Structures are given as structure tokens and as C-alpha cells.
Length: 329
Image (cartoon, rainbow, N blue to C red; front, side):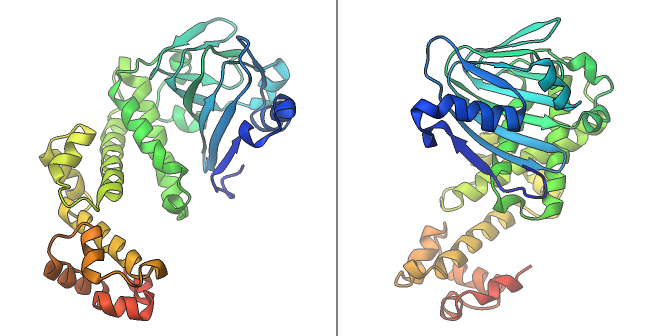
């Protein structure tokens, strides 16, 4: 995986013959890919599924795995370089061990570790983790003493961990980050949020605090709106409550980008309606039904808004196959 070939990669032991599963995974994934050795523990058969992608300056992995011991031998540690691993333990008990320190993580806890320092990583039960491989030099520009933050448990009730997990989830979506500039911006925000998480027990950097939290909350709000725009009862209060803000504070986040909650929601509904109008399988669906399914309750308002955005009526778009979408900024 390289940032230039940034497609999301998915692989699972379910795709491998059971008798060869451990040998293939150890050789092809662990030793060649992530530079570790791995062995099942507690008498539980090995199972693992991974979703991974590379971005400029960061690698992301979402991992679900059975009880295992992951080991970095001196050779593997030397090959790992100076990069750092930030791990959010989403479920299942975990212990990480270096030459001088052991750290145990509960569900939801997090940890920063150096790739060339962690010696043993034990997952005691089935569980899942969100893992970021980050540039040490980049993170050092945000955190005055990164070394002091290594191998310190970050408690699960740290607010920024929830924001970080919510921000990272859409980053596995290829379409969402098709634009190179979006990828660079996303990585910057990812580093910012990790820096904030590390600062949970100390004073956070004013620069980081001012930039990352608002952007992460705004992205979470946008993601929630995109996923639920078809709900006609969706409101600024609903979205604000979902991400832990007041409606007024959420409105301010949209205003910081020169727009409003209502404008963003309308754009998502119109985009959804446009896609539906150009889908062959929905060619026989009435325009009113499509408007309703896209979240509109007033057909006249839908028609006016649609023509204002696309310069054509919904029926026109359906008749010409949606060619005008490309001309909309």
C-alpha cells in the first residue's frame, strides 16, 4: 500500500483455506506487510479481518481479530523505522509491552507507541482496534515532547477519542477522498486530533486545539447529515445532539465555512434526488416519489430548489440522463 495507490484494501482469513490460514497470513500479511510475527493464543483458532488504506503521511487500519500475540523481533523493529502507532482499542482486553513498560487497555482506551519499540502486543479475547501509523516528525511539530507521550494509556472517556474515531471512519471511503487535496487535509486533521488526545492529561497546544476540534465536529456533522438526509424530520437539533453540541454551536461551525446547516442539508437532498433521477432502475418512479424519498415534504419547493441548483427541472434531468450534474460547482 502506498499513498499514490490509495484505494481501500480489505482482506480476511475467511478468504483462506483453514488449514493454510495461519501460514499464509503470517508470511504474506504480517512479515511482508506490517513487519510483525503473530501466533494464536488461549487455544482459539486464528481469525482476522482488516480494512486498510494509505494516505500521504498516514496509514489507517481497522482490525477485528481473535486472541493473538503479536511480536516485533529486533529485525522487525529495525525495519519499522521511526513512525508511530496510535491505537484505539475499540473492544477486547489488550496489553502492549516494551523493554521497560507494560500498558493494559480496556474497551475504548487508546495508546501511542513507537513502531521500533513495542516488543509484544497481546490481545486476550476477540476484539477490534482502529490503528493509525503516523509520521513522527509531523506529530512532533504538534506535540512538544512526543517521547513523553509514548506508552501512556489514554482513558476511554477522553472526549477527543470519540471525535477521532468518528472522523476516521469516512477516511476508508475511496470516493470521499478522491481529491488529493482532501487527502492531505484529512491527514492534517488526523494528526491534530491525535495530538489533542495525547494532550488529554496536560495543556493542549492552542494551535491544535483551535484547528482540529471544530473541523472534526463539522466533519462528523456532515457525515451524519449525508447518511440521514432522506429523513424529513432531520433537524439541526438532531444532528447537534448526535455529536454533543448545542444547535447554535453547530450553526457556527457551518457559518465558519460560509454556509448554513439548512443550505448543506438542502444540497445533500438535491444531490440524492439527482442521483435517483438518473438511475435506470428508478426510471418508472414518479418525480414526486423520488422527492419524498430524498427527504422533501413539499413538491413545489423541491422543484424550485432543483431548478435553481441544476438549471433544469427534474423531468429535464431525467430525460437527458443527468449530463448537467457535471456542470454544477
